[in-house]
Image (tube, rainbow, N blue to C red):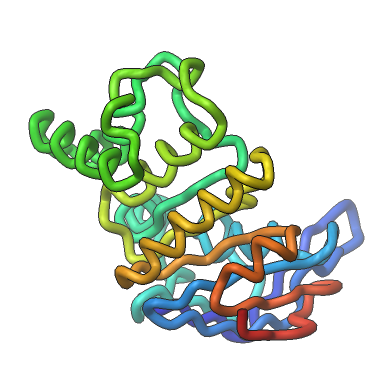
Length: 224
């Protein structure tokens, strides 16, 4: 499903070049539940941006379901992100003036899905994450765990190829973090591919596999 081969990423600052990723090879198969860990400065955020098509590698190849993303224009990348990747962020990234249902509908709005179908699909996703009764609540009326459930519903509403979580439990307490990870596990057991960036070992342990980055390289790989 996701194939990264010899991925390098460097940033230029003046006349100096700073390598961040140094030849990453990573293959994520359909149905995988993968945690990517690493200390600050290891390159995990840069790798997440490349996996999420938010940035391009300096060298190497990245294929999503056979499509070489390096060949795509910015508009094509935007379409690919919206159709194939469901993002879940640490700080939820919900629109404060919209209801939970309207937030979940947003990706479908960008895809020009008719209004009636948008609402039906959004309500179904909220039901799956246990928040149907709070569909008309705004983010300020929801707890942190409930906000993250809305974010997961939004990530799933387009039926993406995979879910990409950037520290999805980072703003939550331990009990709520476990509940959110159980929700990810539930969707993974139904066949959804999930990749999570995390610095928390207890979160990584709940995934099927873990990759540890250090100094821009994959240091270790382990089963959960």
